[in-house]
Length: 437
Ligand code: SF4
Ligand code: SF4
Image (cartoon, rainbow, N blue to C red):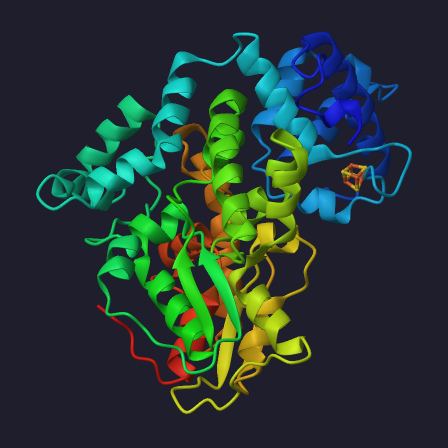
């Protein structure tokens, strides 16, 4: 990694150095313009530069630079598209990482409002909130707040106090946590063990949609893969990272890297059912923690469908391709940005194709990306992106809608009235594994 994107570099949080780098990169992007359609950041950037006759990106004010930074929601698609990334070109341009650096720099230099910090502090504490929300008795209060209708008085109060948009649909909390279910279920004996994994459930599966985790475990065990839970797995830290709170992120990351490296050393691969979190484990821990353990974790972490397809294609192991359950004729599949950014191909599509279903792809960002789209100040930018996604899903018209990202799925639900399922849940039903309540 170049020093420009190295969070441990002494100049990483230096304002003058960061703004100089923004000037360099904004000038290159203005000449290239390839990413015009991905998000509001690029049109905003180009409009500021075009205001000047000589189109000099160096004439942008700090406030204008910050406007571009604020409109980036870390989908990473510009990195996927860019021919000038550090691995390919001497310009060493990594736009999403520069946005992360600018966010961190502003926070370190006291340029983030108290309300913004409060929103990050609340949204980043997914484990604390999730634990309360799924605790019998006291959880009901959190569930009432999170489950209140968009636009309701309760949600307006939450927006005023916590900065969480009052108009967006929020993923509701479950009654029972995924790991509670896992620990309580009867011991499973595998007839033929092909592999051994530790599931990193992510807070979205742990607290909000444990059924994804239950189906993951059952599909894996159906195929002879022994499952355990990765140590004391909690949040990956993404909400902190994407808000520029590097100290809080690094604390979470250091703890997780140690725990996950121990899992790998005990013979487990790590599987993750949520793309943002698998991206963080594979890529961000290497940058922010570094060292042999972070590398080990990165090399042994897999997206949930990626792992199954790898097993199927590896000599000596295979998946059961006898599907005796319910198989829809056509499946609409939303490809999450953070899976595309992992550059692993469309493994969930490949997996679902094994059932014989016809897969229709929808490649459109949800505009949620982590928590960005749920912040009150971003809702007006995020909603039109979600609406476009909703329309594309409706137009695709599959018998069922699938998607790996629970937050994007919530945006699809918000826009279409139908809750998509994770691809592994589609596979579970295709095997005839019934859904648990
Ligand atoms: S990461 Fe996504 S949101 Fe951010 S600038 Fe790139 S394309 Fe836009
Ligand atoms: S990020 Fe890369 S591809 Fe996108 S506009 Fe900038 S230079 Fe072009």
